[in-house]
Image (cartoon, rainbow, N blue to C red; front, side):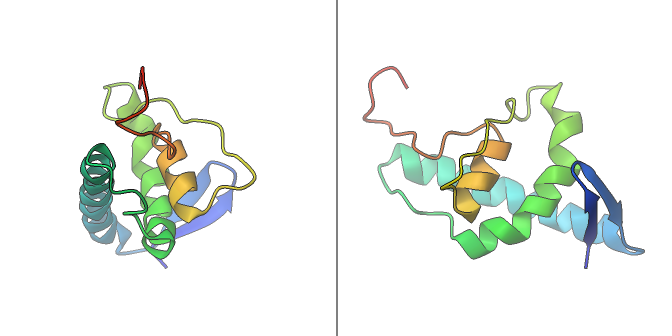
Length: 105
């Protein structure tokens, strides 16, 4: 296990997790930007729930300090019906229902 969740907003990195977290951070960046591009092109459902679930611990570990620099928007409130992808996207400040065809979005 790379990140051990201790409680809400609390985690501990295992011994060799810094290097693994760096890799996961790069995977997180690539996956979320791929979702951005696919969604802008009208291809929804591009982020598999299983992958999103694997990336969520990395997001929780790296997003907060980077929000102040504009790397991530403020987290959006989770919704009860959210799947793994929606949970990750909302945590990173993205609306999983966003569409390039929607006016004003």
